[in-house]
Amino acid sequence: MKKALYTIAILGFFLTASAAQAYSQQMPVAKFKLSGYWFRDKLAYPIDKMEVTLNVSADGRIGGKGGCNVYGADFSITDGKVKFSAPISTMMFCDELTNGFERKFFDVIQNADTFSLKDKKLTITNSKRHTYLVFEPVVEEAKETCCAKPEVSAPSDRPTKNR
Image (cartoon, rainbow, N blue to C red; front, side, top):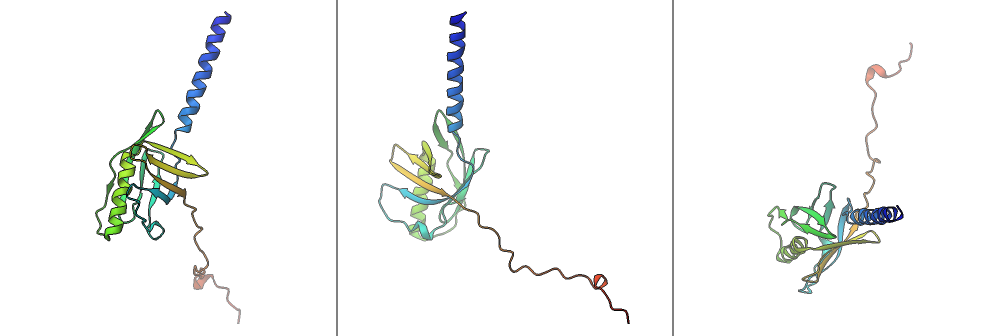
């Protein structure tokens, strides 16, 4: 009887540990903006002047803007490894520097194998090529209501003076 209880306790521990591991493997559902990267060519791309975003949805899809074009891809996480499908994107014409950055950006996503979340920063890494992308969460700004026109009541709603 003791042996059976011991076995059940050990089994429960492993099931709990694997459930915790599966939970920790979730990609955070949020909107992100690129804040850093490392490509092998060591060129300095002006990411502060480009709109590079990553939107992660709960249904296993990502999308955003790659600097010039809008893109989307599917992803899955198995045994702690992330796998992205080849990104599909619009094909707008951009300057050579932005196009070069975007090709490398899509390459990191398509060939990424790990991701991590530390201090709210999401890092997507291709460990074979030693390249990565670092994203920070986007803080949604409140929409301004300062300049909305006040509602004007209809003439029949206005009070009238008795004369």
